[in-house]
Length: 78
Image 1 (cartoon, rainbow, N blue to C red):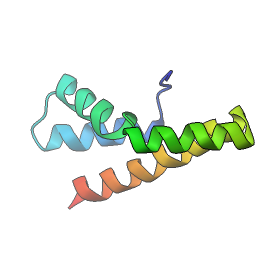
Image 2 (cartoon, one colour; image 1 turned 180 degrees about the vertical axis):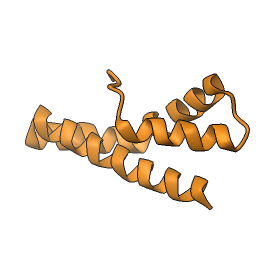
Image 3 (tube, helix red, strand yellow; image 1 turned 135 degrees about the horizontal axis):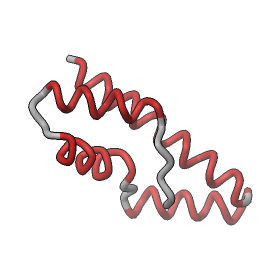
Image 4 (cartoon, helix red, strand yellow; image 1 turned 90 degrees about the vertical axis):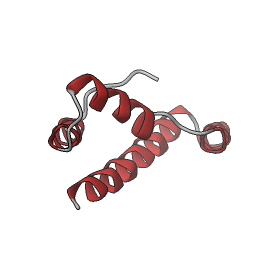
């Protein structure tokens, strides 16, 4: 998946750095915790794409990533 920088990603990286991560560690954690979908999610996205098309697939992935971003920011802000 081609990753475009999202404005919220910079906020997450900054929060991770405040907790002691260096920038490369923060980016690795962002990649692992945010962008990497598990097998179940991949299957759901592929099924969704078969029924509704590629644009719907991309929209679903964006929604998943937005939810993950919100959850990660909430967790890191505590």
